[in-house]
Amino acid sequence: MRALIEFQQVCKYYYMGDTTVVAADHISFQVYKGEFVAIVGQSGSGKSTCMNIIGCL
Image (cartoon, rainbow, N blue to C red):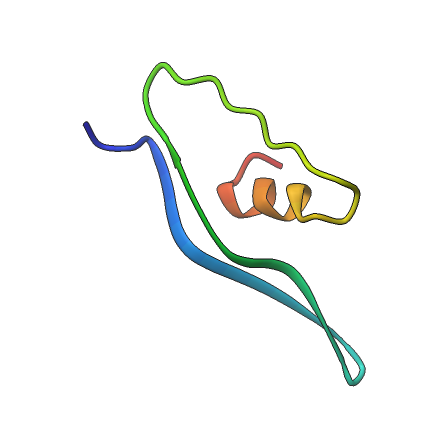
């Protein structure tokens, strides 16, 4: 069965002057038909960044 949503080894970096902020570091994700998914984690762990990459926000 093919995944409805899938990405592999995705990284997202923001640059603030000379500082690099790692928002997502090599994340892989698959969602199949009929699955319920929750993206959880501590504040600043990249949940919103992940949702933006997926296209849900």
